[in-house]
Picture 1 (cartoon, rainbow, N blue to C red):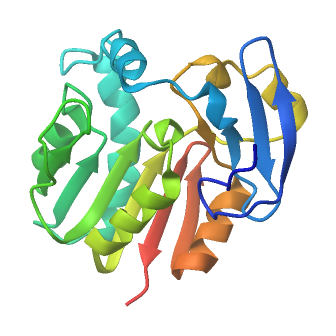
Picture 2 (picture 1 turned 120 degrees about the vertical axis):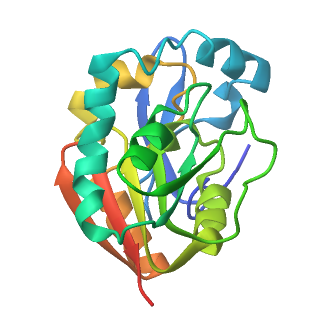
Length: 212
């Protein structure tokens, strides 16, 4: 059965890796690595997996992890910037840190609420360990572009695909809810396609600015 790349809609892709549980494909155009659609988890499976996560405001290690992103993006923002934490999960820890840093942060998560995105325009959209869960990254990306103000920023945390050899032994792919895997080349393609500047300040952090 033929289907399109979930990011760029190309029909040109190749098998990238196969294990006992899933087949992974790589798009020839945007180089996204994605799970064959027949292996995508259903919403009930996703929610059950997410409820196993134990992130909290009392977890100092988790807060240090999130503060790496806050430290990277803060120099690029004005005081009182309007922020959306997209895919915030049941504990809005990043929004808490952003509010503490002087920004005005909203939260949105399709599983844990609110039901609708609170605002219509944001200076920053954050996605920490979120985009690898997207079944339809093109849809989510288009939504971000509509929500992002001119010269606004995307701040993304996700581990990146490095090579087929490393992917084969990569623990990150084993989470059943991780279905879309990005590389430097994929983010570079997105920057060209959506007219964004892109910066890679750390091994798992990407900053992208929307051109005016």
